[in-house]
Image (tube, rainbow, N blue to C red):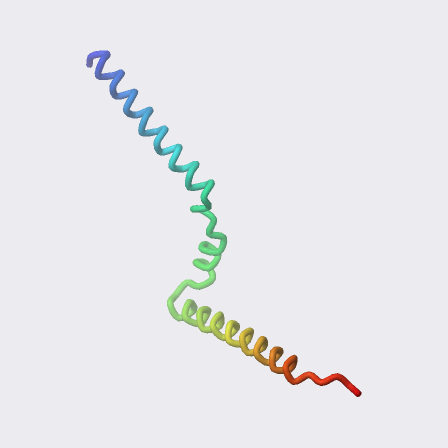
Amino acid sequence: MSSSIMALMIGVSTFLGALGLIALIWGIRTGQFDDQSKFIDGARFDNEEELRDAILMEEKQKRAKAKSKLEKAEREKNYRPVD
């Protein structure tokens, strides 16, 4: 193998390695790998039924929170101070 081909191969591989490193650093800085709950949820909810149950519970909690806010607003609206 000639030395010019070896130099070309080393140059191209160095360029591609640097490009990959730049892409990795960009991904880390922009938060592309910051999925805190993905692996935990994967272990907790192994099948579809448990995942559906988890989604239903989350929706139920959201509805309860919205209902609580609505009731609080209603109480504040009907508030009358003591004479």
